[in-house]
Length: 220
Image 1 (cartoon, rainbow, N blue to C red):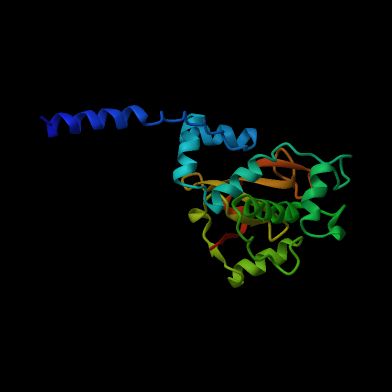
Image 2 (cartoon, rainbow, N blue to C red):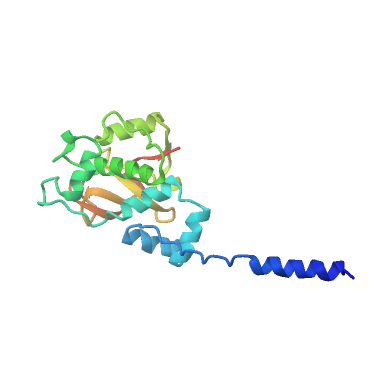
């Protein structure tokens, strides 16, 4: 005599036996950020595996990617010194145009960083001023609010913003703000280790007082 309950149970066992075992999951690799960016990300997100999980769930914003890009370039120097040239420096300058080779490159570095961040994220880069190698052109564009750029107060600045300094003689990328000390932590191209030169030939970390700021700009 057939037992429907027993036969149903036996059928389930046979089907379970035929089920293929799960394939082992491949481990994720950590994004190929620069060393400085890895240290910064570790502080913010924890271990490398946690960073992978974080970026999988929350892809980096454009501003975060700008910070990662510029942090990976800290320590780059001109070669020979004083030439406004070098393997990496040429890359920054060519992001503007071939005619920019051998000229002051602080604005070229900012332009390159934005193009590089956009490329990594697979998006279009922002609008640049008519002459992206000229800091006064950056200042004018930000103040006019053109191309998706808008002006923000230094105390409201955040990582990824651009800051024009010293009456538009120099431009850098903001990394963070200390509203109590009235300072911006930045990374700039063609500056010096003490941060007091607009033609210092290096990519350096700097600290800028609000009093040095001409304008801070943010894209969208």
